[in-house]
Length: 260
Ligand SMILES: O=P(O)(O)OC[C@H]1O[C@](O)(CO)[C@@H](O)[C@@H]1O
Image (cartoon, rainbow, N blue to C red; front, top):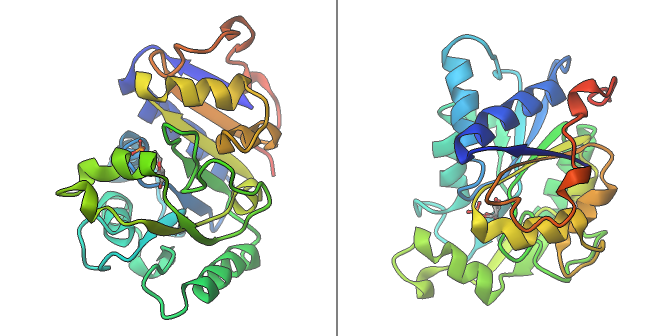
């Protein structure tokens, strides 16, 4: 696990974008894993800026979103299918046919989830998985006590996550209670992962992920076992780390760090 602590929240998107680009460099058909939520928005905006500037071409990329609500109208502006279209597909000029989101409205959601996992595996896995972290330590919608070997499946959202996400809806009642999410096992199969977090509200979860025991209490702590996980955070999100002196930003020097 490499930890990059940025002085300000504004630096996080561009720094994370650098890492995503390194992770997929040399791939003719890069496969991206996409998080939703607020955390990756500045990273997506920076990637879009580089696409617009002609510095980056992602037209050959394929992408798989991490999760989707179950029990939401797919046409709802906050369905993750729509969020991904708005924040990633359109600004990065990806073709809609190359971007997939789990189907939370399928007749058989469990079967659709298994097919989704198999589609990722058939491509040889995700090259770069973009992640945020929930205030309770979730990645994707893998809530505390999710199995470390889990695959894409239906989950129930915790009251904490529903409250955290209520800001995207008119009321807490409108927030779906269930979701379909890539599993921790699916996420761990990615060749590299870039997790972004900003703000004090994430500080406890970030400390548990980086310094805590690897435990299902903090699902993100499984990333301590990921062969190539890069954590890009701001000072506020780093504020509860106890052992900062050991977290030297050395990843630029590690030869082959990004090689598959
Ligand atoms: O970034 P936010 O909105 O704080 O949410 C935290 C994380 O929870 C999820 O939204 C769950 O989908 C992640 O994708 C996200 O990064």
